[in-house]
Image (cartoon, rainbow, N blue to C red; front, side, top):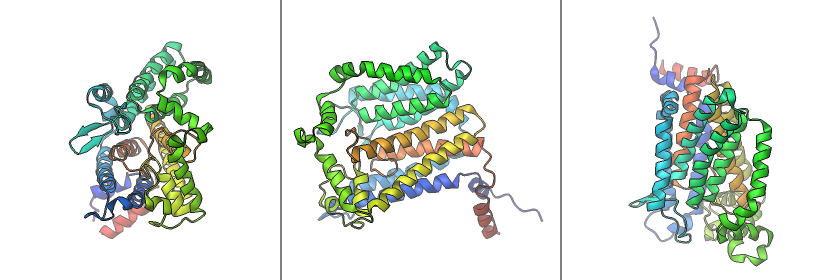
Length: 392
């Protein structure tokens, strides 16, 4: 008797279960730590969970659903819509200049759009949109990628989102865009000489950027790393964070038992400084598990790109991997006082509805590439057969 073809089992078989499971694990880990980091705000409140935790769990849940839906569609649907994606991305950034808002401590920035009680950070969505449009542009120019005019076009393409994001005051995201663009250009085969020229140009222009491009607060954050005793009101966030990591030792003080975390003295402990919360409560072991999870996610995305059958899909995966790795390095660099505070979340771990939702949109695109442009081989065969046997 011929066995019925089960579409659900086929869908599972064609899904990159390793990447999907790693992402879910990272998000659950992050939710636990955000809950711990915000428990002090719920003391005496009617709710047992903070608003940050509730928003994050809603964003992760919606993101996971959307990633599965996106993975079911051929990724070429999205790459063919690149002009529309570009228009939407530019438009939503321009809207910020009129209706954008920032935190009370930073009235000079315009990085958020408010919709009643809900806020959205457009730059998180634009990161994914930029990866799509830039990969298409690189694909169109792949046979003349090292032509000077090709590099000029690509440079202008990259500078549009970088400039728009920087002008709104989101310096951290603009750095991530630079990392994404650089990695994708390298993966596309751009000659190393252009990178040397670009670095030389940045070095030559840095005095002008310092003098005219950076606000005083941004300058102070750099100077505070060199002269912390002169900028106690600037460096205190990082000092509390690194002190918390130091008290965690090898195994940590225990979940929900971190002295700094539970006292609420780590500024933005649920967001920018979530790594400090992990270090204090779960110690060196917890930090390694978090880092290893993000590294494995990054490597899995790169592996999907290498196995894909098209140059453009490899570029998309390289862009997504660069986004996750770039944010990870910048965020941890902030927590360890190696880099100034620039307001970058730790992917999957930090609170924030926009970042958690949008990163799953990108993961859905990678899953679509795996499903429609790679040969999954026997990667999921064992698990698939388990489901199949159970069904029978």
